Length: 201
Image (cartoon, rainbow, N blue to C red; front, side, top):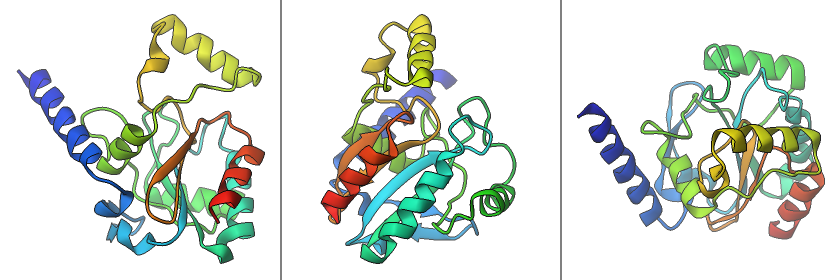
């Protein structure tokens, strides 16, 4: 009964999210516990990322900060949502996570409260993002991408058919009208992301 209730709730959240046309209909919670309307980012190009501090992809914080510093003045924002769902690689409080990121990567872009991105308790924002842009596939020319694909395919040969987020540092690119235009899997290159961001700016 409980599983059925959770499944129904997850479906309701997914349907509600997919009914929206842009990201501006959502509220999120920032690192200080404040409720934040996504409307405050209207007119900006956004890169929304689920992150982790103890992941093989964690050094991507350097790439993200470089992009942020390069394009921030042109109306580019990165929104960082730590998530502990993948290998429990985002432990600790949001305050501890923020301290780690500023000390090790000097990040300047905003971080938000930890969220789930999959499952019945997934953030409605991330349910919307996934509904707009499904899984795009790992870069199989990348060693880690090939390893991830092999591991996921052993567990589920059709894993790539689900829009669920597969791992840390999945990124969604949102245009100035709040529309999700592209999804970058963790193995996407910084050059590919920068090219797409530049086109929207």
